[in-house]
Image 1: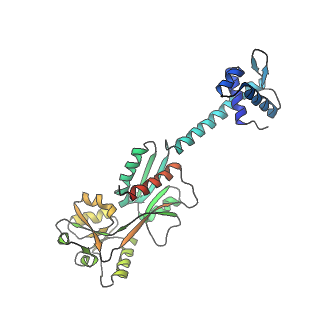
Image 2: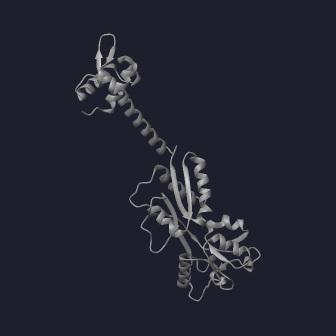
Image 3: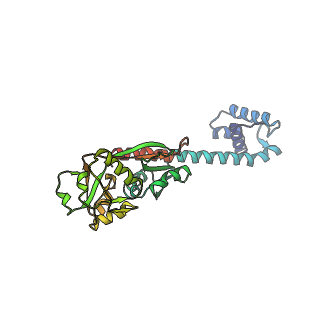
Length: 298
């Protein structure tokens, strides 16, 4: 006993209209096709649901019991399909993003604003957190998408390259380095260096040592967040390095940012997602949008 959805739709339409002709028109079927579906339903159920006469139809007792049941099934299914269509057409949905604090207050707000201008019905939640927390939020399901720099060991996540950018020096506008045509890593040794704690500085110093052995860079201060480092630079306590995507924040502190040369050291950032997990339509579309947004340098 397995009534099909087409049979249930035909029966409900017939019950509502009380007429084969009107029900057939409602479903865009021929009258014979509708009659065939009702006969198939009765055969599947093993009982009549409609008593027919030359002028009108009447529901049997079983038929009357089935009308609200079939109507509810159809309404629930139509509602579910409409909900799925809304998600796939980006008329609703949710994107949860985890990103380091600096990324969350520079690049991502601009990208999210541009995204929501195109898709105002999709909700975006941004979690600004420590770099080390990004992978955990994705793996736990708290975030659909995470953005983070390359790390050792690499997290057990799928990764798409978002960008690779060179390190840049940040210093006050009146700083002596402002007069230089080019600024090198060697120049940093002459000024107090404000660094970030953890793997950021460890990897940076390792890269410098590998490329420029004669330069020894010893941080005068180590802080947890780049916003703190920029505030200290603004107060004349030293210089710091960051990646160019942070330029909007650097500008707020009225500081200069210049690419460092000799050597040109870079850092890569990735868009991370859970392995072997299909993203929601909204999250998948946002990732594609973000990659394009960054590629165009918007």
